[in-house]
Length: 542
Ligand code: SAH
Image (tube, helix red, strand yellow):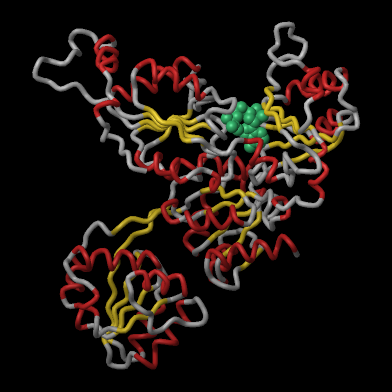
């Protein structure tokens, strides 16, 4: 995309903008003669798609990355907000004592005011902003105020939810047309814009948005107007999301089926023969972790990849960082080591953060790979070796088993009379120094990053555990296991082992979890985050 936020061509800043901004300023706010008024920022009306975070456009993500202000609606999956560098504000059912929804007029005013203040604004809306989304009203308000804006379309609920439910709205044997219909209007309203006689005759699939609360009346009106009561119907709730639920039936019995299943909004009603296909191409619900909520305890800045993997498996990732990491506060020791880095024969890493922390500091000090040409490198496991390879260095030694003991044993034959540097976190197991020093190594260590324990569980995670709705919590180190156990409320503790199961990265973490009073239900055989997910999949299917 060529445009940037503050790089507006002059035709985009019509006089109207200046008039508007002056009209809305008190005289004391008005620019003095020699002051240039702020150029208005651009507003992007962006479709976030239906829920799966992969179903937003690249252009939408790019807009989020450059936004100064993000306003999002209640249908938007909060995972999208990770692309933004600013805190986003929800426009409906806001939390807190003053929490309330902004009405459409207030939203329009906010968009205009933020843009006039020079901000690049993203208005993020569920699905497509122009399909029953009132996006066009926001665009009209911006146009009226002379604010530059763009619309970034999104995947609307009808196409996404039907695809994820195994229904092709225009299967050539079943439908030559599709209609998106609002279910919000009362079919009995005299001045209704919808003619149910026409809808009943429509030669294709009908998809009703916002129709759940009127389902009985919608099906009744269609049948009264001549649609056969045997017409297949599907109601898709939370489509394209890990907790998608789909109920199928006919116009005759769908109301009862939906009531029995307890479906709620947001749901779509799909009416037509294409619904029959679902039995053969229902691909999404057969994913191995479909419907399972998985608690991810990693620091949030490191959880992108595992979030992606959980979604890929059909699960719902719940971010619940139990520790965070930060660079050491005092670099004196590290810098003194870097100054004599050519003295070391081996450099040993036991975490990906250690690799990044060390190489970032080296770079900062003006040293690059040439300064390390004499050294050999050891890594505790594949993930650490992979991070090292990102700095274009091969690991000379990676033990088969991801354990400090295995690393120490593998290093022993190589370190007699050698200088060994261990790059580490402030916490960790202290096996390497004793084993390697005893083997005759000249051993040194330096701490490049620190762990900081979370002081409470994130509210959402705590609520989900207490209400029995979090299916798994993944623990990836002994200190995470200990801190997680410490942060559990008595009610939450009771749920561990019943509704919430624990998966751990290794036997060492399992031991720490057991000592902290937790029950463990799955242990990764490959000691990585993908390994934890494999163990959960095996436990779920076992
Ligand atoms: N602009 C949105 C629609 C907003 S109207 C879009 O293009 O999708 C809100 C209605 O959309 C809801 O009442 C529901 O009928 C439908 N909807 C939105 N997301 C949905 C989802 N994930 N699953 C099923 N229906 C959804």
